[in-house]
Image 1 (tube, rainbow over the protein chains, first blue to last red):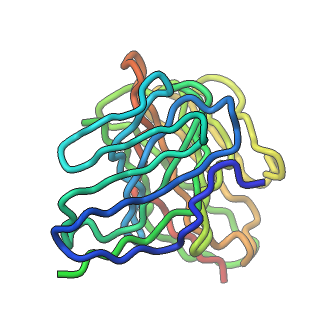
Image 2: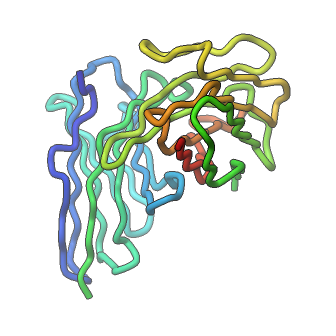
Length: 112
Length: 117
């Protein structure tokens, strides 16, 4: 049973435009959410996180939005750059120090 | 920032042999490390939680006698794949969280590509 879902396997956007990556979860006990970026044959790199007490967290070009009622979060990257091309994983946990449950990832391609 | 080092980055072994993978937190202490596994185009699946000085906690469906985990110090955890078979071929990734830092995210090593022939 997939508790964290990234239903779109891929996304392609033009350089300079906004990339919106979506994630849904089913476990209502999740209260801490993270986004990771991953290149092939490398480990994931932490991008940004959000606690369930917030609905938005921003860090430079990256903003994560959380809609608890819809059990949905999204990662916005603006402006998108070719170097952002990678696989992005959404992850969630029950508490900030607990194990993470990952989605299947979405492959973002940013076209020059 | 927090750095997690994993070694080796890739390994090829023959069926029936054992392989040890090391995971080190380089600039912080980690009382807990996590071992993940990723198959091609799939999600990262948690295998086990490695606790310093105590037994690891394995996820459902993961054979503890096959995947031996040792967390002997605050900076080192090892995963040994015993009697490896081709179906164990996968990408293994460890991660650790910096202790004492509020809401510290998990930091991942660069993974180990295991190929069993």
